[in-house]
Length: 426
Ligand code: AMP
Ligand code: GLY
Image 1 (cartoon, helix red, strand yellow):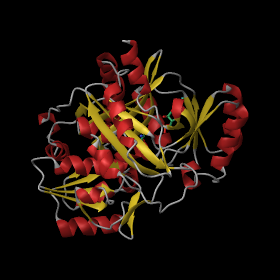
Image 2: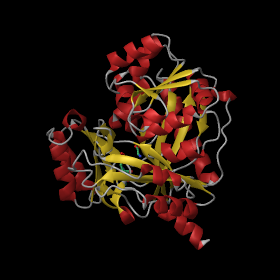
Image 3: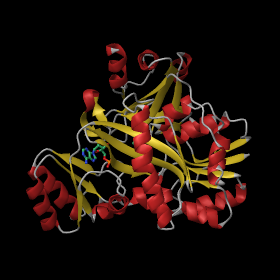
């Protein structure tokens, strides 16, 4: 079959890489892709948020399956537009994508469905938001309701910081429209995990567990980012925890969407906090995580094309997934300065040597300039290895990274530390 992948980041590179290695797939097209993706797919210069352009491309190419990587086109209704034209699509329609597109929608639906999550209130008025913050006290969490590329969440250590964040969001300063509603949330304590599911109508198929490192610096210090590294499996997600997340989080939220007539076809991503009172939902996303997708694709042994087509055609109940039983670990190399200002256009060398040292290098913010590979975004590379243990995978990635020739590149040195610590303690 012919598959069209929408997006151009590390997640989409991992999807294209895996699709190219799927026996069922004859051709992969990616819009817009990037120079790394170009090794695995034919890239077409249509942006991931250009819905008209993407519909025109699909009509010209007639793919058997369209896989939508990022949330922005899903929330804008790309799924609806392609399905109206008869395409098989992996990725939910606009109505179900609200689960990620609007945190107030998502929290209210969790509340209705009895899905465990932090206590919350939704506010549009800054004085009302302040009243809640003052009465609940710090630490407390303030979130912009709309899409903010992973940056619209403030875990405030003082009431003052929380009030300032809520006022700033509601004034439209930091997140524009996305901040016109704010969520005030109780602060949860525990270890975080990413629990992803393939969903098609009533069928919910858990993927292997994973864990992301959102903070910029070692030891989970510094500002939140889109994710500085990830690995799979996450040992904190025991079989019992996975079962609890499926039964108390994934099943009821999908049932609640179905009840609203918002059928979900795609990836449901539950960010969960493993608290003393059991797993609680931090957020839902309606797509694969980035960078979680990179280690997941490296561990997946099934034919990804067949699996995603089965989901798109509502035959997911026929699918069983097979995984490499070791650990896959991905370290993100970002541009020095990210998530704030950074210089673009720096030449990146040594990628072949990094791969020759036993890794797969997924591209995110890369571009070609005068025939040379340069950085063009905040998160730039995802260097990934699979090995029999987390320690072995971690060692393999960091040894390979010594071959990277990019002085302006930055990466954490401790990706996977919780899993490695558990292995060392075992
Ligand atoms: P979200 O985009 O809602 O997942 O939030 C981003 C990050 O903020 C999460 O990965 C957590 O680390 C943190 N966070 C979000 N909500 C809470 C909460 N209620 N309690 C503690 N930390 C939170
Ligand atoms: N890695 C977090 C996310 O994709 O939202």
